Length: 496
Ligand code: AMP
Ligand code: MG
Image 1 (cartoon, rainbow, N blue to C red):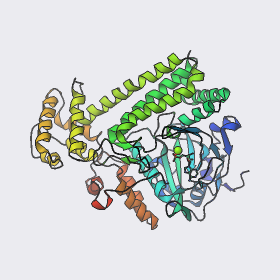
Image 2: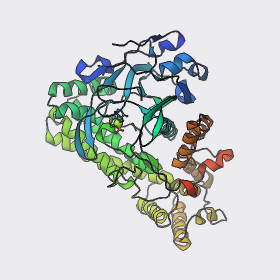
Image 3: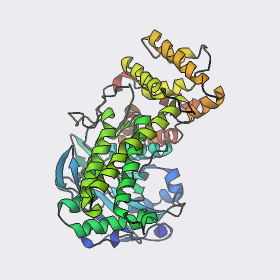
Image 4: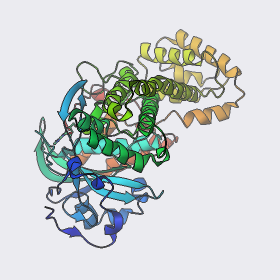
C-alpha cells in the first residue's frame, strides 16, 4: 500500500511508472519509501537536471526535495524494489535485491531515452536483510560526486541528480546522518538479476527477463537467429571495454560482485571505490577486501570472471555450450583492443606500432617503482615537448630514478618521430584523455566533513571542478594536487 501523499504540479510530469514494472510480480515488490524528517538539499547536478528539463529553481522546491527523499510519492510513480541474487567475493550469496534502493519509474531524457530513476537510501524493502534501508551522508556524497565525475570522464555510468540529507541518525561504525541519492540509468538490471532465476531454477522467468532486456535495450537483435547468444556477446563486449576504461583512468570499483555488474556495461553501485593516486598495480581501494580480490590489476580478470558467471546463468537460454564459450572467448580481445587504443591515446600516439604497449607498460613500471602519481604524471607527460626542454623537469621532479626516466623519455621521443603529429595537436589530444582532475579520496573527504557540518559549498565546488576534468582550470590547481600527509592513509570500507 502506497500511503504517502502525492506531489502536485509542474514537477509531476517527470515520471511514468516504468518499463520494469511490466515484468511479472515475482520480479519486484511495490514498496513505498520511508520518509526522513526535515530533508534538505545537499548537492545537485545541474548537468543531470538539464537532461530532464529540470533546473536549479525546481530542484530547490519543497516538492522536489520531498519527492526525491521519498517523503512524497511523485505523480506517475509506483515505487518498487527489484529482486536479484549474486556472487559476492567469488562466493554464491543467494538472494540479495534492492535492500535500500527504490525504482520510482522512468523519466524521458533530452535524447528521448527512457531513464530509470532510483532513490538510494529511501528505507526498508523486503530485500533489506540485516540492513536498515538507509545510506549515510558520507557514502551518498561519494556516489553522487563519482557518478558525475565518471560521466565527465566519458565512462559509461549511472548518473546522479541530487543528494538530499536529513538529521536522522543511522548506525555504522559510528552514528552518522542519513541521505538519499537520486540516481538514474537506462537500466539497473544486473548480472545477478539473471543469476537469480537460474539458481532458483525458474527457466521461464529467466527467459522473460532476457526477452525484456532484448526488447527494451537491444531491439536490433530481434529476428536474429540466436538472440540470447548475441545478448551475451554484447554484454561481454561492453564489460570488457568498461574494464579498459576504468584501468585507463585508474578507477577502482572496490566491490565487483555480480550483483554490482550492469548488463548495459555501466559503472553502477558506487561504494568503497577509489581512483589510483600513487601508482601501485596491487592497490586495493576497499579496506574490507582483505585478499585483494578487487585490486586494481585484478579488475579486467574479475570482469571476465563475472561474465562467466552471467554466461552460466544464460546457458539454458543459449542452449549450446559452444555458443556460450564463443561469446566468452571474445572478452580478452575486446579488452585488449580497447586497452591498447586507450594506452596509445594516453601517450598521444595515433598510428599503431609494434612495441607501443611495451613503451606504455614501461612507463607504468616506472610509476610503480618511483611511487609516482598515476593521473598527475600522465598529465605532465601531456605537456612534454618533442625535443628536450626545461618542461622535462616537471616530470623528472616526480621521479626518484631520473636516469631511468630520462632513458624512457628518450625512447618516447624516438617513438614520436614515427608519428606525423604536430606537437601542439598531440599535447591537446593527450590532455583530452589524461584528466587533470580526478576524485581523490581526500577531496571527497574534505567535502564530506564540511557537509557533515551543514556546509554544502564544497560538494558544489568539487562537482564543478570534476565536471571539467580535462580542462586546465588554473584557478583550481589545488584540486589536482596529490593527497596531503594527513590523508595519505584514508581508509574506505564497505560501510555505507
Ligand atoms: P552492495 O554490494 O553495497 O551494492 O550491496 C549488497 C547488498 O546489500 C544489496 O542487496 C544492497 O541492497 C544491500 N544493502 C547494502 N546496504 C544496505 C542497507 N543499509 N540496508 C539494506 N540493504 C543494504
Ligand atoms: Mg549493490
